Length: 302
Image 1 (tube, rainbow, N blue to C red):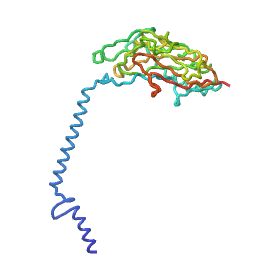
Image 2: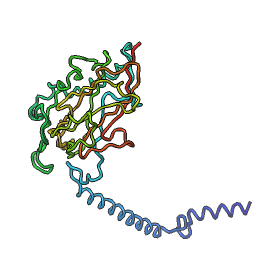
Image 3: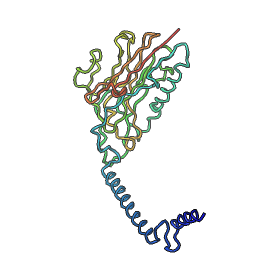
Image 4: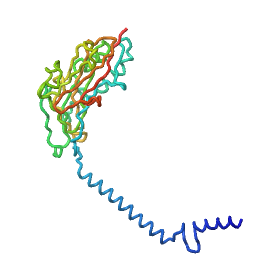
């Protein structure tokens, strides 16, 4: 018992020594010095960190990325999309394609002509391909830039105006395709036909980024049938570029291309690949959506 009391007393004495006025082995003066040291130490670290961030922020532009030398070419997106890159439906069951048509209706809603009548936000850039639309430098005092109008009427039977099912109900499904946005990116049309399939040579124009779809697998040759393209120049016209970012270009509408498969072979799943062609647009087999996309398309009927 005396030994236990001695150990207990030693522990209590370490926590608070009333004779020496020490807490955990240190006097109040010692603790004050330690506290002051770490306060100054961590204060200096915080100051260095904040100063570094402030210097970094001074090199950034609110409207334009400072460095774009390693930005990948734009991705190619399509609507409707599916989780497994498969779009298979049955003409006998409306429910199998209803979700696809709903996605397309929602996506095309901002492209209604009625929503683009405000002349303070939109301007008419024509319905024929033109060169880039220069809206001054990013640092100019112009402020918010106007956006080019793009009417869904230009997408023909894939506009969803006359055919609310976008061709799905009659076995002629439509896709809506767009190039993803990259601030200050100017896509360059191909200057030669070397990288373009022979059947797409006629698509090369001076002010359009062409797009072409075909079967990805050789065994599907002839099964895809005729493919029709709708939009300005059946591609992506240059007057919609460059994009100035969300702050300066809040009403920007990307140009669209509608792709319709008008006589695809029924009851057969076909791997379809679509690519865009340009001198500064590259594709990659490692990235399914870099300048291209492929999807398994199947139209079934009993």
